[in-house]
Amino acid sequence: MKTILELGKTPDNKNDYTAEKTKPLWMHRDITDRKRIHLAGLGDVGQNVAIGLTLLGEDQIESIGLYDLNESQCRRMETELSQFVAPPGGRRLPPVSAITWEEMFDCDVFLFCATKSVPALDSEVQDVRMAQYEANRKIVALYGRQAALVGYRGLFVVVSDPVDLLCMEALRASRTETGDHGRALTPDQIRGCGLGVMNARATYYANKYPEFGLYLTEGRAFGPHGKELVIANSLDPEHYDDQCSRKLTELTVGANMEIRAMGFKPFLAPAISSAVLTVLALLRGEWNYSAAYLNGLYFGALNRQTPDGIRWENCPIPDPLFERLEEAFDSLRKILWN
Image 1 (cartoon, rainbow, N blue to C red):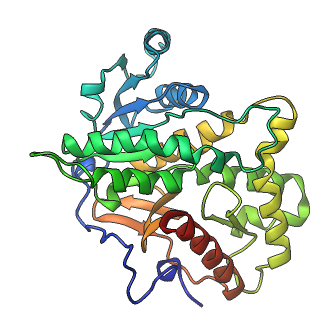
Image 2 (cartoon, rainbow, N blue to C red; image 1 turned 120 degrees about the horizontal axis):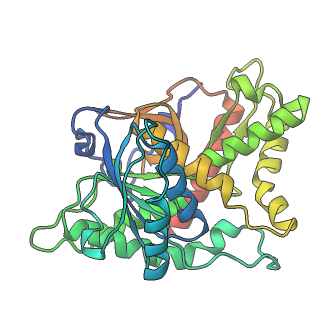
């Protein structure tokens, strides 16, 4: 059996960026230090990410800076979140302020939540994530270039869909223009937060239907937040059930369409499970579902941040499951490099 580290490995991958295995400076050598977080994009997801981080980030976050092209929205969120105050003697909440474009990367952790558009509820688009790719890739490229121009050394987190593809766009863009004093982003400096909600949705169905119950204790989620997602009911070779896993994957992928069919856009669970809870776990150095650089592209799996770099959950993967992961990996690679 193979491990996640062998996924997509080739003798000579011309499209691979060599990941620089340097200690992440944004951690300040101490993962207990509070971090300055800046967030760009205050749409449905961005607003809820800002709210969640304000309420839950007391131990990990020093301050939160907000940016949006809509200045009124930015001022409104700054004012309202600054009025989140615990009763006297209560817990500390991180201060919130509006920031300018020039201040965007004066932080330890940057969250990209900007998006141009989301397909309307009456749209017949099945893969909403990919429908956003063409528009959002141009936006994230602007931020990637700006990060390079100012020599940003912090963590660049992509929350907008599709996170895995947009992570690569940010990396590519940062290498096209660095200026006299700039510095391109390194592969390990970028992270995508989209897989957390897929694990959450699989967990929801595993709690709802007994046939998927094993996922709650032995299951895993892999890959992108979309149709290439791979859900495994178990990593144990004796318990892995390919048919059951594919059925649970299908339910999980379609969960957002279920919410849209009710007449709502599904942004609450992604904002909290994929972004807020994942980012806080990442800052604490805990295991989390995020997309990190792996053999030429960004791929989602269980991993955690250490002072020495990213550590993947490197356990043996059943052969039928590894074949599914290879298909998902190759599908992403074709989108990126063809």
